[in-house]
Length: 175
Image 1 (cartoon, rainbow, N blue to C red):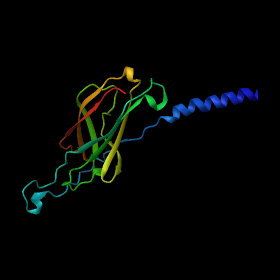
Image 2: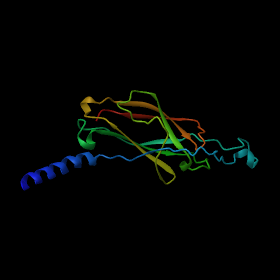
Image 3: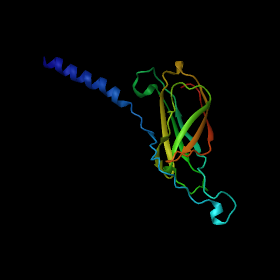
Image 4: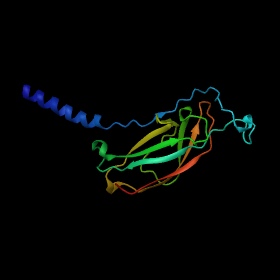
């Protein structure tokens, strides 16, 4: 009986370990306060040519990493694809990235799975940049499609003001 109990406990631990091993935290949903957005003074308020209020800027996006799955689905994290992004603001902006949610929309290309949520997200803030990690079920390379995506990204304020977009590409062959 003791021997059977040991086998059950060890089997449970081994099967739970694989289920717990795959956990990605790279973004959270943006939760707008819906309070009126506090715009910063623009150049016209300083006697210069330009807008009276500084507008929501277009984000700067840098793809900092792409990984593709290497195993069949169900193989812990090795079946996941990941996309790491670094989002920042133009140097001339007086805003900070913490003031915005970030919305992604696929303009062109075929997604292998739902990579981008339908809602704005926020990432971990480090050195004035928002670091976002997206993960998807990618599977074994024999079942993957090459990534050739054109993505549009916008900043969204707490008052739901939307700024101009930037476009970036994601290109990666099969894993």
